[in-house]
Figure 1 (spheres, rainbow over the protein chains, first blue to last red):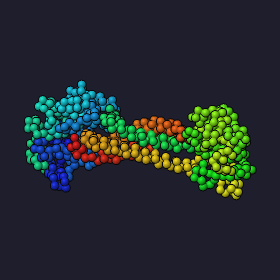
Figure 2: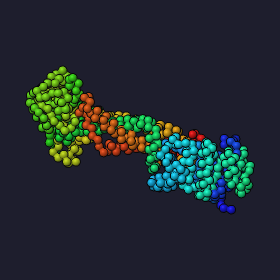
Figure 3: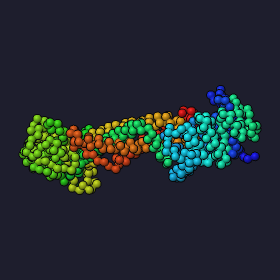
Figure 4: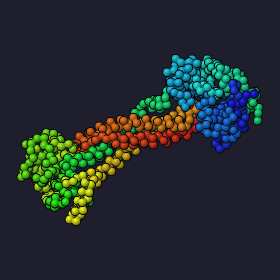
Length: 230
Length: 373
């Protein structure tokens, strides 16, 4: 078995001085190149789990390891997100003031330079997602499917080892969803990137190697290899 | 795309707010520039008028609030002329008056045959003869403002004077000054036998100890007098000090307003961009980079606003120095030191005004920020 990229060990996340429990003693490992679907009803703790995995949110108990390192500062987590994690959001999270190319360039600041090199790489990735001809368009000039493809290009711009996708097809029509899912799977296959996807969609989840079901902040089923640990 | 482009695009994407902020900064720095420039221009005009006359040392009454309110017996000048090291003395009565209809000018009364008359450069006409009570020499700027020439008359305090000559000085104050016979002016101002100050020329002006020796000689007979070189007199004049302090404090208020404008704009910007900042954090931007982005935006606003402010300040200064009420009292000079001072103040304003908003941006929790879409 390969080394885990992300190890979550007995993690809990509570809010409001413990009155609200989002995650309860969760243990989970994510391995290279695997496709993990995290499912569950709204409010079950899926997104919180994804946020804790990426350091966007912190655990109130337990520990989160990334490639055997336990990052403890925002600065360290930011560096990991910049270089090792790609994040795809349900609502795309593109900056409205920047065009598609510039949105793709954003994660490369501090990672790749100079500006011409960033531009070249951003254009190559837009080409890859079929949007080179839309590079100068702003998000409000793109369809929702195109916006998500730009967001995917942005998420892989620094060649991450894991892609975290929070309901990436949640705002898309059927056709766009299919394009986005194919793109994510193609990236996983070609780059060897692990893919962790939060989804409501049973069909999407069925395409994953593992399905992890979250309920009331706990993992209730995990048909994969490491989830039953702890 | 360079980092600076991100900052610029953030500003350009909200053009109206950026423009209004720039205007606020421009008004603040322009006011600062004009006020400090006016204060220095006034001092420069005073200093220039003394230097034009070849004065090395000025004798004034101790404890007077301003240069013009001094009152010294004119006979004192004759005693000081006999002091060791003193080459020449010219007593002077100086005051401000309105030349009808409304030209505010400095009026200066000189005794006939004193050296100070030799320093006058005439553009036209001649000096009034020794016994000519109603003859005056007026500065070229005043002559032009009033449309007067040699032979014409002007009215001062209901008395008519004949222009016998038009002078041509380098200094702004002297370009407007009206010179007349001392006795005539004393009568006109009801200050018979009195002068405002003494102009002294030393035998060895380069000798740094000459002024000290003069002070020692004067200390006994004239303990109420103070002798200073021309720079010192401008520096220590209470009226000029007050003017300096007033313009300084007003200009700092203007700068403070500029700081509040930047602070307000960036606070609004950070609040509006909470979501964007959450996105940047989520894609791996370091807190330091987010902090730098807000600081750079503040500095960009300050730099561009200051550029506009300098143009505005130059216009204001030109406008002020051209007003009939102050013409001749201001000699605007744009020095590198003043430009550096204004730029440094504006830059500090930009940085200080951005620190808190930048800190707020860095403190944002990315998850909370992303919920603010």
